[in-house]
Structure formats: C-alpha cells, structure tokens
Image 1 (cartoon, protein in one colour):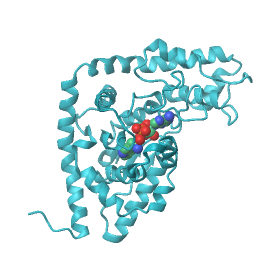
Image 2 (cartoon, helix red, strand yellow):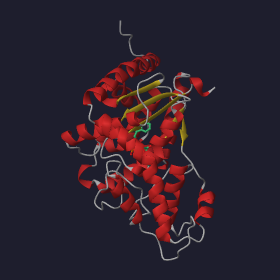
Image 3 (tube, protein in one colour):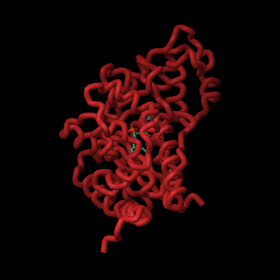
Length: 334
Ligand code: TYM
C-alpha cells in the first residue's frame, strides 16, 4: 500500500552535515526510500533567513547533495533529488501560504523565537514566514509522510493546519501530511552541551558537534570526550542528559532499543561505554563516508542529478500550483 505513497523531506545546506541530521533525518529517509515515492531536496531558499556566504553556500549545497547520493537517495526510479531554488513553484506557493497563515501562528514557532534571539541584528520577515515556505515545499508534492527530527514537529503541525484551512475553503486541494519522527535519534544533543540540540550552525566548540566531514579518528575522539556525569550508571534519565544522548546515538546507529542497550552496558564504566559508542558510530559511518568522499569529487555528476531532479519535480509542483491558482480564481494562462 505504501507503494503509491509519497514521502518528502528537505535539509538546509547552511553548514556541514552533522550526526544530528544523519541520525534524526537522513537515515530514516534512506530506510524509507525503498517503499515510497521519495522527494528529497536541499532547502537553499530557507538558508537566506540567516546571512550566508555565497561561496560557502555553494560548497555546502554540493556536500549535502553528495551525502544524500551516498546514502543511495539518487534520481533512480521513484526518487527525485533536487535544489529547492530550481523549482520556482516553491516561492510562488509560499506567497499563497503567507496569505493563509496568521501572524499569531508564526509568532508561536519556537524556532522563530530561538533564531530571532540568536540573530538579533537580522530579524528579517523570512525568519518569521519560514514555515510558509516549508508548507509550500510539502504541499506542492502531496506528500503523505514527512520524516524529520523532533525540532521540525511544530512546523509540520502548522503545515497541517494551513492545508486543512485551505481545503475547507476551496475543496480537496492538498494532501494533509503526517510527520514521521523516529523513536531514537529524533533529537541528538550536543556532546559538550547535552541539553541543547546538536546543530550545524554551532561550531564554536568543535567537540560539541560531529560533522560528517570529520575524519574517523576525530569522530571517535569527540565521542570519547563527551560530557557525562559522576554517577557512573549507564541509564537514560532526565537528570543524565549526557548518558541519555550517547545511548540514543548508540541505538540510532545499531537499531537496538534503549532498554536493550542499558542491559548490554550494565555495570560497565563510562570510559568503556564511550568506546563502544564510538566504535558503533564509526562502523556505521565508515562506508558512507567513503562513498561521500568519492561522489563529492564529481561536481558534474551532482549537478546533472539535480538538473534532472528539478525537471521531474517541476512537473508535479506546477500541476499542484495550477490547481491552487484555479481554485483561487486567477485567470487561466492560455
Ligand atoms: P534542518 O536543515 O535544520 O535539518 C535537516 C533535518 O535534520 C534534522 N535534525 C536533527 N535531528 C535530530 N537531532 C538533531 N540534533 C538534528 N538537527 C537536525 C531536522 O529535524 C531535519 O529533519 N526546515 C527544515 C528544512 C525543510 C524541510 C522542508 C523539512 C525545508 N522544507 C520540508 C521537511 C519538509 C530544516 O531547517 O531542517
């Protein structure tokens, strides 16, 4: 039955890909790619809400795409991979979404509150209306399921509300999407600050974030240096954020449950535990990194994939946009 269903997810190419992106999102994208029609893209338009250096943006965009391709998410068969800015229907439907979303709803978004406190000199309109563009991304392709990390849940709920509001006014135009948030890995925290999400924009403390560009030794060392506590029991608990985070990382790479992992590590010291987590992560990432490095060398391959992806995506996106414009009462383009 999932054969005809569509999953869709985007990632911002606003920095180097992190272990958080991989475990919270990409790993699930890859798992689901076999069963569904898949639409994956880099959300380059979204990155403009925070100032970007153009050369870095270009580099990060290719890196992010190389990673998706290394995961097997290419333009073969039912998969479409592209760059959001190559399909102008996103910007067009985002304007419509702007007019059906209330300021009160946007003001309530925790990501807006977070980002506007971090970037006080640049609280631009895009930062506030960011979820309208994200709703457009999802609704253009009639996505059934959107695999994301926990931090995107609120944006998904807003997308559902706006889609339902539009459908109530104009009939059945949009598919109302469901979020797919994995049980483990949905919220990977910083290794040095385990009460805050691991984020690609936070590279102030290099040991806090694992970047997929880090070499294998660096990755293992960062895990071995992760902050823990002085209690020396390996259990997930609210007052043990460091250990909980490492257990989550371990489970996300091995597919084990937290209970299974706690049993496996019962009585073990923190040093040995961190060593085992490091080994599991490194084993999972080693083949992926080798493929990623190889693909990244071939810019033409990456650029051709997204050219083809944009053509295929445009067909679907403009069909939906045409339907929306008609419902709104815009004159037909003859
Ligand atoms: P972005 O680029 O911040 O992150 C990409 C994906 O990675 C997940 N993620 C995490 N998961 C677990 N732990 C973490 N520490 C962690 N950090 C990031 C995110 O939840 C996300 O799934 N607004 C989106 C991009 C977007 C989008 C869309 C997503 C634009 N349009 C349409 C889905 C559908 C974002 O900024 O993700």
